[in-house]
Length: 41
Image (cartoon, rainbow, N blue to C red; front, side, top):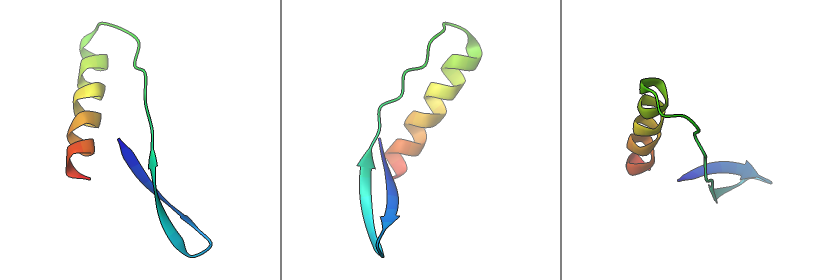
């Protein structure tokens, strides 16, 4: 997963790893949505 940050007028792609702990529906929904957003970028 990457995000873009702007520094000194330039854009940088920053990789990020996220750990979601739990086994419920909310955790599944959060990780599913993050995965969908990562595919778009």
